[in-house]
Image (tube, rainbow, N blue to C red):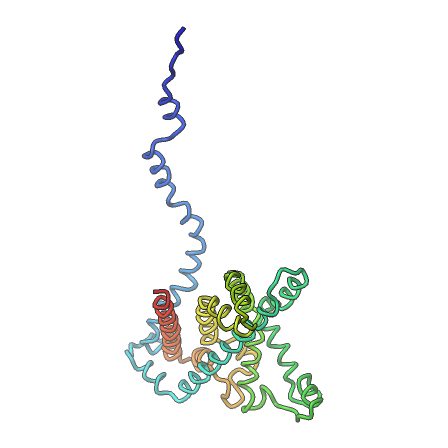
Length: 312
């Protein structure tokens, strides 16, 4: 008897769908991701992008509610750039952004190096250290306001008295108000940087550490020649995020000092708020907001270009 041969081609054809039908099925469902994104896109369009467009138009107008806006061209930008108050606020913003960025990144790196590991105790400590990031800024500002109480029995002044230093005015003194605001920002931003550094440390090649130990490198040299080069991309990302956060600083300054005393902590965001909401100069305030947006965008683009050149 001869065996009956079965052609496997029909079975294979049944099991494997045609490429055309697969592609048509996928192309027919291209709208599904956009359907899920539609509610968020509508909210962004209505509450963010449309107001941004209106602010850009208002920056070229003399805004007069209920009377009609008048086109003034570049006058608002000229007033903003040549204003002594805006120049001082811009300098304070840059100063605060630089020191907050440097302080939070340095403290975050130190905390990450101290808390690196897989121990359960370290997990609890990292969670406790991350709490300032999730606590609302209003609560943090009120907490630091209490600690900054200018009298001798204030919390921080009591600690200063233990080491023989006199009481400080902190946020109530023009000479120390900016440093006090910076300290609050560093305290809140460092735990966020710590978590990013911890993620970066997990990606550093451990073979390099072993090779450095074999070569007799000290801890400092391992940190300098292995850890920091391995965190180069993390530094660039954190720099962008921290710099943008510093340039757009508003909440802590508004709640702690509202730009005072005597304008010693006035930043661009608080000045824009006062121009628009208190002085009703919406056109000038919009021009200041546009300039701040352009400065943030320029900083982001410059850092991104530098990162690409380093990779090349």
